[in-house]
Image: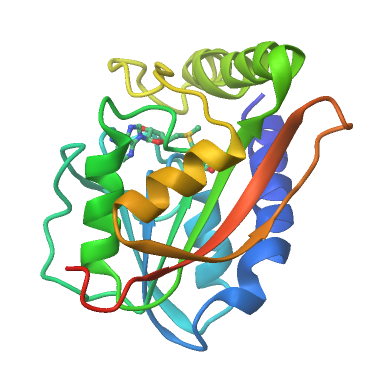
Length: 205
Ligand SMILES: C[S@@+](CC[C@H](N)C(=O)[O-])C[C@H]1O[C@@H](n2cnc3c(N)ncnc32)[C@H](O)[C@@H]1O
C-alpha cells in the first residue's frame, strides 16, 4: 500500500514538473505553499538547482523534510525573499483565498506558478467536486490507513470551486499579473487543471 501510494504520488509530481520546470527561475529560493506530501518539492530539489522551502497549514509530508507550519493568512518570512513560488491545488481550501494569495505575492519577487483545477458548466462543477473528494479527503484516508499521515485536521475540506475567469479576477484583485494560462483539460468534461504563470504587479506590495 505504501509503495503504491508513493508510486502514484511520484508519477504525479513528475507530470506536474514537466509543466513547470522550464518556467522556474534558473536557480535560487523557491517556496512550495500547501506542499502536502512533499513529492512536488522533492521533484524540484532533484533538479539540483534550487533551494526549496515548504509551507502548509498541516503536516501531511511523507517525503522530504516536511513543511514549516503556517496559518492560512501569514507566511512567516520577509518580503520578496523567494525567487519563485509554486502552489498546486490549494486555493479551494482556505476560508479566504485572497489573503493567502496576497501573502504569496508579498514573499516572491519572481514568478508564481499556480496550478488550480477550474470548471466550466454544471457537469464540470459536479465532476470537479467528485475529483476533489477522491484526491483530497479520500486520498488522505487511504494515506492514514497506510500509516503515512495523521488525519487529525480539516485542511482538506474544500470551500471553493472556481471558473477560470473567476480565478483570473481574483489574481488581478491581489496585484498579480497573469502572464500566461496553460489549460490542462481533463477528458473535455468541463474540468481543467490550469497552470497560471503570474508575476507580482510592480509596486503592488
Ligand atoms: C490537495 S493538497 C495538494 C498538495 C500539493 N500541493 C500537491 O499538489 O500534491 C492541498 C494542500 O493544501 C494545504 N492547505 C490547505 N489550506 C491551506 C492554506 N490556507 N494555506 C496553505 N496550505 C493549505 C493542505 O494542507 C494540503 O497539503
